[in-house]
Image (cartoon, rainbow, N blue to C red; front, top):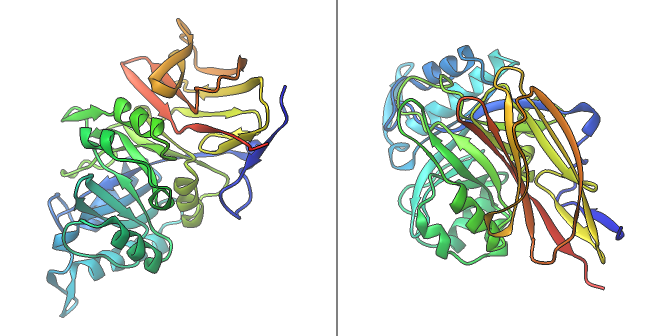
Length: 343
């Protein structure tokens, strides 16, 4: 087996595999502040009542400068949102609310700016300006929402990729409209983008957390910093079961990381999946081009820890795991990326 080392993209400590915790939430939803139903407080209370762990309020940016009455004065909708989110987080230690906004862009379509201190109005037409805005804002990042086929033609930009951390591979709120975007996800990975998989309910009704399609976060601690860090490190997976625990490793690299190798000959996989409510029926290992290179079928089990060694192939630049569950449910992990170290 070739020598290898894990390449970290952050100064924060690596994830502790002996103490993994799984949290489920919605990174994209709307309230009556823009095009949704229910106040921001009602939205957060609804999500908490339905048993999820976090939500990102992402109302449309062009509504956020409007002034509304609040406690005898007029304040912007953005300031009102910040006030509600801050107060909700102070009141509850078992739920995390984050703030963001949705903006349209040319040519990407809709994006969510997450964990931001402020907002901007209008359409994003220049991504250099967006990067400067994100740098000035401090600790925010963005995701691609319900990706259209235009993402297939966007060339890789390593500077922009520093801020683009995730893409929706599922969007909607069953039994209402719901779409999967696996092919768009794989296409962007093939172009070199280092992005993770998320799933968003994109709520426009007061139904936050009622459906089971969620983004799962894997981290060691439950606090705002850990949730944001997990998004940025791509420690995420898309799930359609709120009871599925899932992750995988290749050699020393955890889901979402780059694995930097020297003269590799083989890759050692560990796949963990657990769901005693919705049994696991099939597992696939998928790589570049959306190829399925390994499939475990007819499982019908609640838990699996699977070890596998596969030969290294130069053409395979990334790997993801797809899980099929009873009831036509699917899950899709963030990738592990393979990088060959220059000799």
